[in-house]
Image 1: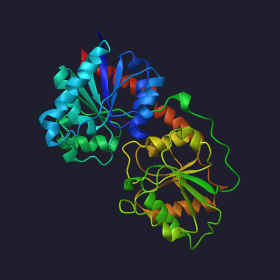
Image 2: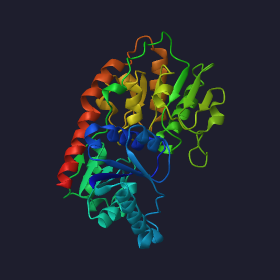
Image 3: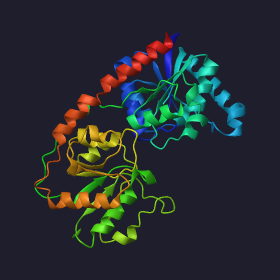
Image 4: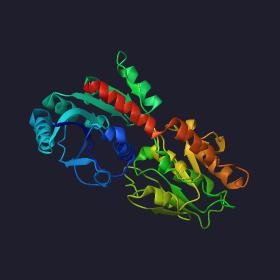
Length: 361
C-alpha cells in the first residue's frame, strides 16, 4: 500500500481556510504524498479537489468536544476513516488538521492509525483555552499562518517550536492590474462575511458618519455574503437607507466576481493572514483595507489603509479616497510584486513538504 497524508477540514464551503488548503493540495510536491481530503459533506472544497485529482472522503464529523464524542464517537470516526483509506489501497502515514477546530479528531485519528500529526493554526480569534481544549500542544508539528497568531501561540506554550508558514498564491492566479477609472467608482465590493469580526458593521457605521457630509446618490455597496442576522451582527442599515446595500450570498467564483469591480473594501477587524484581501490585489483590483493580517507587507500606500475596529478612521480614509481619487495611486502593481515576493505558494508548499518528510521519516 502507498503511504497517504490525511487532511482534516470539516466544512467544505468557500472561505479562507478552505481556499488556502485547496492551493496546498494543488501543489505537485504535496500531491506526490498521496493526499486524502476528509470533509463532513460535499461542497466547494471537495469539488475543487475532485477537479485536481485529489481523493476525497465524505464522512460526517462528530461533535469532538461533546461527552459522546470523547467517550466513543471520535474513536469510531477515526476507525471508519482508517478503514475507508485502506479500502482505497492507501496506508495512513500522517494526519494534517487544517485548523485547531479539527484538533481533537486529528489526535484520535493519529492514535488509531499510529501515525504522526500536524496542525496549521489559522483562526485570528483563537484563544489560550482553544489551544488547550483542542489538544494543540499534543501535535507533533505546529505551524501558524501569520506572525501575530504565532507569537500568541508561543506565549501559551513557551517551550514549543511553532513554525511560521504563510499562506500564498500561485503566479498563475494573477491578472494584470485594471486600468484605474477616471472617477471614483459608484459600485463597490465589500469583502468578508456576515461574521461580526469581518467588520461590515464598521463600514456601515462609517457610511452613517459620512452621509450627512457627502452625496451618496447612485452608490451601491455589494457585500460578499448573506445579510447578517441583526441579533448577531447589527449593521443598522435603517440609518443608511439612502445608500444602496446589496448582499450577494455565498460566492463560489470569487475572481470572476472581483473583476467586475473597480474598487473593493476590506473592513475586517482581525485576520491571521487575510487571503481575500491579497486575492483582490492579485486579481488586479484596487483595495482599501484595514491594517490586518499581512496586508502591511503588501500595501505601501497609507491612503489605501486604515486602522481596524475604527469606523471614524475608515470614514476618513473613504472620504479622502473619494475626494482625491484622481491623485491617489492604488499601488496595485507594487502590491502584486510584494505578494509574489513574500507570499508565493510554491515556497509555502515546499516548507510544508519538508516538514511532512521529516515527520514521516
